[in-house]
Length: 377
Image 1 (cartoon, one colour):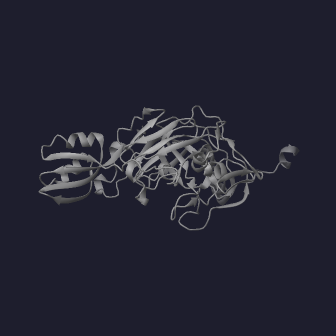
Image 2 (cartoon, rainbow, N blue to C red; image 1 turned 60 degrees about the vertical axis):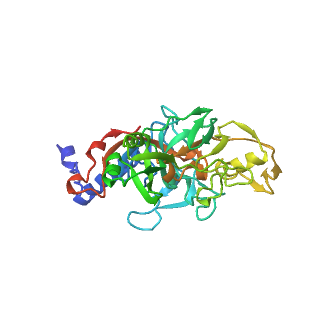
Image 3 (tube, one colour; image 1 turned 90 degrees about the horizontal axis):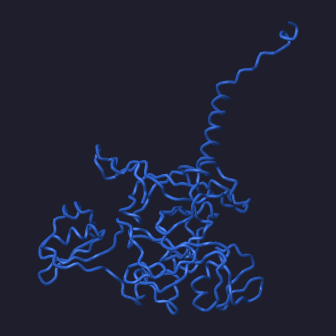
């Protein structure tokens, strides 16, 4: 009895302590889920239309390719670059640690829709020059379709992509620019019905010409109307680098004549792949070697690559890279303009849409119901 009398009753937690413990548990659990398994993203731009729409809310799997361990460890939980609703940085880069990738059950494949941190391009002309100022794991998130993986030979011929000399199968909703010739005005409702974007029109010699952005299936439907007399693909000719808006990677017009629709063959860097450092290879892979390939004491000067102060004439890549493009081909800022995505910039695979909101829809049609819980292909 004496022992029982000496036991003190367990002190009850205050309501504030209970609340704090619950919040702390929720933050830790959400951080682990977000970092290791699934993370929610929102589509902010039209670079993947019609495959992914603006204000599609989707989940990205970290387990497919393996989650990355954090590089920037001093960060407010559940933030990216800034504290919510402010311009205050949500992190400090005073401590940066090497990041590693945990085992995944697959690797990035041709045709996958991938979320990655935008690497940028040091050679790109202003105002897009340089690379993202944030640490690798906090750089701006992009979403594109993987066209080429490490070791693939990619080229583009009159807007058609070839991988290892085989035509790449475009996603069903891939869009490109066309001009159509009609002998009468085309009702805007027809464009809307077919999901075609009218980007302008003009009249000439009794004909009406429309500039449109459309999928191949929409174009096939449009051809069935007899008032459409001709359809012309809007393609920049091979060798034409005159339009600086489409000055393509590697931004070296004396050695390359690449443009939006025509790219001469190149090899996507692969870990362990060795290349000779010719003038063209240096131009193509300079930013990879000097910025992204985890090298120390490397520099480019007088058209040559130096590592530890010594000129090198061949180079072996330290990690895999990828070539990414948007399905909305002519309204996508992608690898055609800024180059390769390093493996350590890969965030995860886009797997399904859980919500989609049409900002221009009426009250009853604000939610795109048909897109809810749809798989991303």
